[in-house]
Length: 354
Image 1: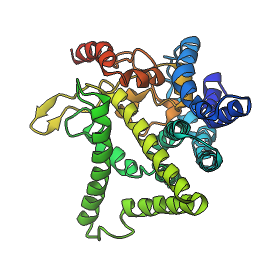
Image 2 (image 1 turned 90 degrees about the vertical axis):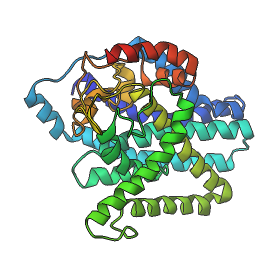
Image 3 (image 1 turned 135 degrees about the vertical axis):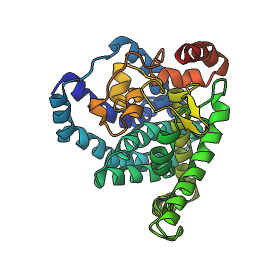
Image 4 (image 1 turned 180 degrees about the vertical axis):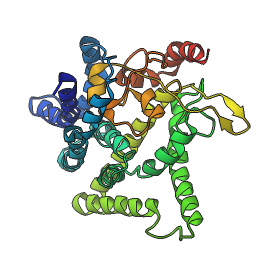
């Protein structure tokens, strides 16, 4: 195995961050401050590591090597192992929320920390898995998404976002000049609505009832309700509140990343309602090596949109793709500061359009 392949094991390190918060609390740091440690690490320390580790712009261009990588069970095992690891992390974080004497500041920190970890450790691998044609991988992806209450992403992302990306019809493509605070609520609502609409249309076309177990949204929503029931039975109202809140934070984290990945980019309309083919020119790309290890190469997003079924270990870097000035952790923070975001990104959007 090459070092770049072993590096994907770092994706599991995110699950250690809640334990780091607990250790800080035991070491004497006020618990209401310690709960914010995962956020400090992700948005404060990860950008520094990115700067130290540097970029990886290399590609695997040999078809024989790419085929060998796609058949290697190591890479598939990593994404499958995320499921038990995330469910254990979520259960542990829920228990701590129930049992710790947290004030409002500490409770908010723990909810946001768990939600951002869920966006990283649950939704991101689910994004990889739902694109695959095997039976087990999309199943794992659906379970991961249901555990954060964003099960509609499984339907809308594959059948909606990848079809309409970089057009006005896409819920997950931010417009030039649009702030993240306007984009995220719109994306959350429209993605859920579109998922139900897409499944309803599919079933009507096949002559089947919308309100049946043939509807993917129905059985994933039932699984979400099971998760809710477990949280309420185990932790009462406080446990249920935490489960719902961390899910909302995880979904919002995903949509901030969508904002970063597609801000301002658009496809040329070649006739009314028809757009040029999606290529690697219609998504933002980033080559920070460490963050790509943490996120299973999600930052090679341009190639993902050009070849959606390509596995994460084989995704390509395209030099002519629109390039972000930093990794996702840094860009996430920048997106929360709209004047600075527009100052940095709007000139890059105009340059990409040319």
